[in-house]
Image (tube, rainbow, N blue to C red):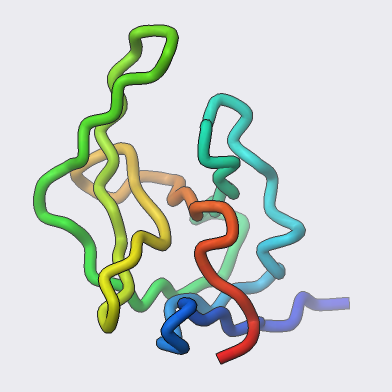
Length: 104
């Protein structure tokens, strides 16, 4: 059976993501302190309707590694929803845990 497309909303009720499969079926990034879900561009059909930061947010992990997060924010309230690890979109986008829900 084909995956249904599910719509997800920010806490301010702005539509931020439509995706198949549902985000609960996406794997978690094991090294992320945010419990991020991994959206594989090859395996998912999705549309992220957020504004992406021009400059990265630099995070230093406990193990000393620096990560550059190009954050996707809700267009209405500016809360972070997802992020990329590269300046140009790569094969993966990472969704912050509990950044959106199915109720608008």
